[in-house]
Amino acid sequence: MINRRQVMAAGGAGLALASSPAWAAAPDLSSVTDNVPRIDRAERTARIFKAQALMRANSIGAILIEPGSSLDYFTGVKWWRSERLTCAVIPVEGTPCIVTPFFEEPSIRETLDVPAEVRVWQEDESPISAVATFLKSRRLSERSVGIEETVRFFASDGLAHALPGAKLVSANPVVRGCRMIKTPAEIALMQAASDVTVRAIDHAVARTQPGMTPADITALIVAATKALGGEADGALVLLGMASAYPHGSHQTQHVVKNEIILIDCGCSVGGYQSDISRTFVLGGATGEQRKVFDQVQQGQRIAFNAAKLDAAAGSIDDAVRTRYESWGYGPRYKLPGTPHRTGHGIGMDGHEPVNLVHGETTRLAAGMCFSNEPGIYTPGKFGVRIEDCFHMTGTGPKWFSEPQQSIEYPAS
Image (tube, rainbow, N blue to C red; front, side):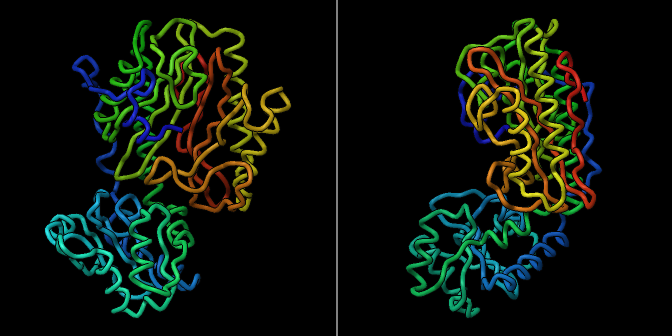
């Protein structure tokens, strides 16, 4: 469930950034990711060809993409969003075009990993005009232009004004059509990220002691993740009653024996994410804690077994919620129970389309990747979340990480 942006933005006691103090170092660990191949030019070029095929199938002449994971996915360009527009236009035929400020061109070319034209604009010029000029030069302004779903309003609105009469449509059939189906190279990177996170959590759990704070545990996780060859920003660590709040609490928290410790974290390897949650106690679980843990275990198995090829994504959430409601939780998303979706897509972003949530009609297909995290939360008491990700194969779902088996110790 963890969203790295939420961790980065939070200042609360449960959402912690690690400063990796000296005591958290992990000298006994070494990288396990060095030999995992990263995404190369051939793979990105194949993505461009697939996108163009999807454009033809959906009568789209070009798509507009701003910096972020989609720009990296198709072009390799790693950039940030600012008031100075950098973007890519991928046409239905021919090479893409990168539009960027004149003084940024050398930096853009450092990570550009596909054949592409680069068009620049000066500080007193309009970047949207450069985009429109490119589209006109390829006679693409006469066709539908797809807008990637995270493009900011000023860019799409500016293009609408620069191309009067042009039809702007969603680029989802193209971008989602590519990114939702992972290739073996992507799956391998996600597997490596999951392997790192499992070991980092185990490392931190073995060193967790009464009196520790969320920041202390986060420091252990981040240090171990880096030593193992992953990139990590932080972790979500919830202690005691704070575990009943899925995305954290500003309460002061310390590890106490016989109280819930909930860790939700992930890392990136070669630009691809993991997302794993573990719930455990030190000193032995109470009967109530154990009962809820066992129910969440069952919920996770129900979700996994319901994830069949061609099943609607929403049906997985429905299967879990039906069982939970039979135990008296809910109904639906009410508490005590599961107030969030059963899972989310994952890949280059920790949270990607589509979600395992009621009403989602997208059909599961080989190559899709999801989290599986049907947590149960009781305000004023505690919450339990076990989260592991899986990917769809030609014969059904396959775990990236093996689910937690015991509340006493969350090693897989």
